[in-house]
Amino acid sequence: MKIIKQIEELRSIIRAWRKEGLTVGLVPTMGYLHEGHKSLIVKAVSENDRVVVSDFVNPTQFGVNEDLSSYPRDIERDAALCQEAGASLIFHPEPEEMYFRDNCTFVDMDGLTKGLCGMTRPTHFRGVCTVVSKLFHIVTPDKAYFGEKDAQQLAVIRRMVRDLNFGITIVGCPIVREKDGLAMSSRNTYLNTEERKAALILHKSLMLGEKMMKAGERDAEIIKAAMVKNMETEPLARIDYVEIVDAETLENVVKIEKPVLTATAVYIGKTRLIDNFGFEL
Ligand code: AMP
Image (cartoon, rainbow, N blue to C red; front, side, top):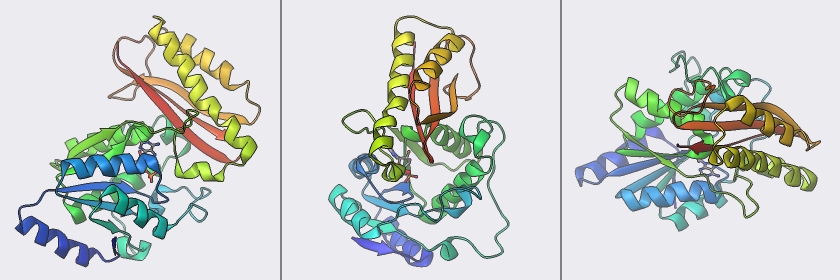
């Protein structure tokens, strides 16, 4: 698997692909790849002639007290997974290659980024929008692939692409879970045995919420209260948020009348995990 570290080298490879009339898909990741990432890559491979996987722990999307330095990294393992999934190359730049020391330009967004994860991570989506914009400019993909696991991120990227006329098709891919239901995440590696068991509470309470909606409950407060109560049965869990929002605008809903996103973030010990489900009437 080719690992490209320089922007200019990547650009020249992509120019050559374009000369041949090939289509290009992009899968942006922060590495430490698992089956969730692989599903995005496999989908991209099925829809494009060439697929670039970016593997970059983006410093600008981490808050000051977050896990930037401890975020798991293993480029050799990532390369093997990309090879198996059929990717064409990995783009794995150093932070200094991606950001000038005096970088002062960012892509930011009003709305959409203020609630949910934006409440506890106020600068996170500015970092995400900035790095994804940079990757879009560098790779110039026809299509880019994002997981529904990060549902707010997916909505934010769709909006950014629309508002800034990127002309790139954004493809959302379903959440891949462990056998017991825990959503796969690079951060699951932080969990010890006890915490790993406790982490199941996210999926369990989401399933409870989904069951209530399927049974016809339309009052968001009643569903949220039941989910919170369920989460509180797990002593290792500390809720960051449980919200039911409009699937497109991400604004809170009172009555469920349109497609909604039910999303949660929960600390299990020191590890902050997220999960969600979408519901259409
Ligand atoms: P990350 O490396 O965590 O930034 O994730 C890179 C991409 O993979 C994002 O678009 C995520 O939404 C997606 N992703 C991460 N975990 C999963 C999962 N369990 N299922 C589907 N997509 C995922």
